[in-house]
Structure formats: C-alpha cells, structure tokens
Image: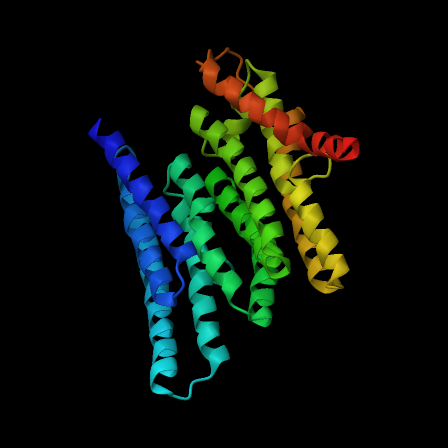
Length: 342
C-alpha cells in the first residue's frame, strides 16, 4: 500500500512540476518547475522489483538532467544580468545555450546519447512516462525560443539518428527509444510550424506509444525473439501488435500517418522541401525495420514451440488493448469519414 501511495504522490508532484514550467513567465520559474519534475521522477525510476538496472538508469537520468538544469540556470542568470545591469551580451548566444540545454533535457540529437542506454534499465510504464510526459516541459520552452537554424540541425540529426540507430536493435526498449528520437525530430519540426500541430502530433504519438507499451507490459516482453514465439495460442493479439508497430511508424492506412500528414502538408506550404525529404526518407528507414520485424513474425522463418504454452490472459486488459488497437488501425478512415460527413 505504501508503495502505491508514494507513487501517486510522486506522479502528482511530477505533473505539478511540468505545469509550473509551462505556466511560468520567467526562465527562473521554468527552471524551478523542471527541477521539481526531475526530483519527483527519480524515485519513480528506482523500482524495487528491478533494482540494479533501474538504479543505474535513475543515476544516468539525474546526471544528464542536472547538467542540463545547471546550463539552463546559468543562461537564465546571464539574461537577468543583461537586463538588470545593462551588460552587453549577445542575445542569440544565450538563446543557443538555453536551446542546447532544453534539447539535452528532451533527448533530441545530437544530445541523445543518454536516452537509449537509460531506457534499457526501465520498466515499461516508466519508459512510457519518459517518452511522453517528460517531453512536454522542454518542448514548450523550446517553442518560446526563436533559433531556427539550431532547431533545424537538431531536427535533421534526430530523424536520421532515430532511423539509423533502430536498424540494428533486438531490445524492444531501445527500439522504442530510437523511435522516440525519430518522432521527437518530427515534433520539433511541427513546433517550428505551429503549436497546434505539435499538440496534435504529441497526442497521437502518446496514444500509439501507450498502446504498444501497455501490450509489452501485460506480457512482460523486452526482446524481439519473445515477440516471435509468444502468441502461439492467440493469433489476433500477434496480428494487432504488429499492426500497431506499423501505425507507430506512420504507414498510410493507419492512425499514425495522420499527424505526419499534417506536418508534410504544412512543410510543402512553407516550401521547406529539403528538410521534408530528409524526414520522409528517415521515416521510410524506420518503416523498413518495422516491416522487417513484421515479416519475420508473419512468415515461416521463425521457430514456434511444439508444446502449447497456456498464457494467462487478463481479459479486461486484453479487451482494453484490442479497443485501443481498433482506433489505432481504423482511426484514419473514421476521422476522414467524419470530416466528409460534416
């Protein structure tokens, strides 16, 4: 009971920390919110069931976030000195320092090196929080800065790193981490276009990540070979799981394509063809390795146990998963029909 109550407390403080950052009107207030968020997230990472790896992950997270927070505080103090004491400091220089600190906090390339290694030591629910909720505050603060060049470099590097890094992975957590870096590139680009498109993209990405991590958490799946040999008794679950993978990758008939479609449309209107080409090519690479996994699972080139494993499915959880999967697979046609009916 104590464990659950303490988790609720820390999750509440974590949410409050993010809200403080988003609603603050000064860099110092934003830094304070980020610190509250960090100090409440670390106890959530130190999971008692998975002790050694989760402790290592929480330490890695603390060190990287503390470095980013220090740089952010340093640059906000420089800005205060500039405003109060009329010291001559270049605005773009301080903005670049703040931007790099926030990119490090969110795990975007070229400051991404801590992210996949840290994901490897987390439970699925903690990994989901790291991939979704922990991105909100840094991305909101990035939207206040107006440094297009640095952000564009980060976008191109993020989509390329996310695509190429995921090619050689067998660990599902690392695969999701590189997928998250790739999606973060798209989110940063949507942030450059408009905040409403970023919000839509973030919601869809969070929903699709939740479906996959929910499934992995139910069956305690951590490696690719577990996926191939696990769902012997239930082919529907296996089929839907891989369709969700393709949806997260952004294959057109599925829901995951909708936010990418919006970003592509806006980029073509803004004539940003180079960055659009790079982003689409990287997405094709991510789709390639998702499709490769799906082919391995659906075709006959994997081993299936001769004996039948009676996996105990929790009916409520699996039904909930199948409902979410329905929206993931048929969401795009349903939304299109809805708009045509209007």
